Length: 494
Image 1 (cartoon, one colour):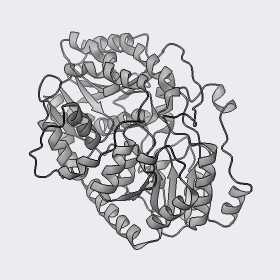
Image 2 (cartoon, helix red, strand yellow):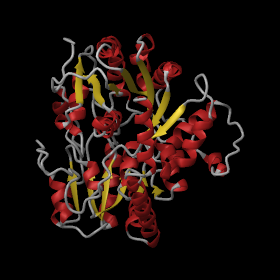
Image 3 (cartoon, rainbow, N blue to C red):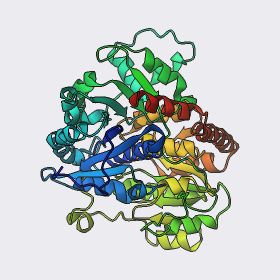
């Protein structure tokens, strides 16, 4: 295995099962499969498995640098494999694009498809030293793992990075919206679901279609969700006949660590030596009242226009609610490229804004990477103004924090429906039907106050807290997600 690197050199045992993770090269996807690696590797001795995480040099380093809640390099049965990919263009995002999908990342997506041959070589190598190879691949990396079919002791499982709600709607619509006979599903909600217009570029829709052709090769599907959150939609997916027939589904989430901490980080092992000091915004949070702070973050694939940033700044200040605003542009394809710092846009705020809100102790503006999960898990955080990417939704739900939804692209408009209408743990700030319009400061002020300083917001916080407790308990021994994980591990080690 001369063409790949491992973080430690322990040889795998012939009797064990090797689980190989193949993530899609975008932060939310990289993180989800790295966190699933944590769940599986923590059971490595019970089930005799090793876990191998495969990515390009750039994206493996990105995943390691940003992981929260555990230290992969300290896990003896966890291995990173770094492979080279062709050079790809890494332009800055375009906040003025008519479709806000991160088209600037598409060249990095295409480059990662070239991992097919090194991944196949790794799988063949592992097949000679392990009893079985289990490949868990992102649904958008199907072509990369297609050689699984030629390896006698290998099988693959498709990981879906979005909600069961969104996946079900997509498949249900593709099937012509057949009648539903499941009493537990509120079918009336399916009549006013946002369309996919404006969610993706045409190029990425073609990319999806190409990768989904390989789903017929898999032996089952994995979802980063919890049956206590989306049980009825997971059940509906079980009943769908797609890609050659019914296949087994496992809802193993939430993948992220679910320890709810009071005023410290989510690093639960005091012996873990993190290279990164505790972020300054957490120190500020320590001094705030419980559930009094709004986290504002739009993820790693979204960039707001200068005009919209100004309206958001004014609305937040006028709301008179405390906030932490993670203000940074979307990631480039290569977050470590020499141009990333030199060409990055520094969003312009109103004159004296940061000094004014900071001086009054009202808010903190963070312009670098910030530990979102740790902020959401802090007792002073009481709301989350979010783009509603599924990774962010699950982190917020598992920490019991209600959401003010501002969808931008992809599955986010439909996640907004799930959060606000189905689960009732959030409200809508940006109406998807009005997505081409600026969200005014007055609207932002009103919505923030509704979430953070009203009876309605308090009720959402109570529901979110209750759902958070249920979700965290699902990962305990005997919990619904723990049972799903044990079922999956028993199946792949059969």
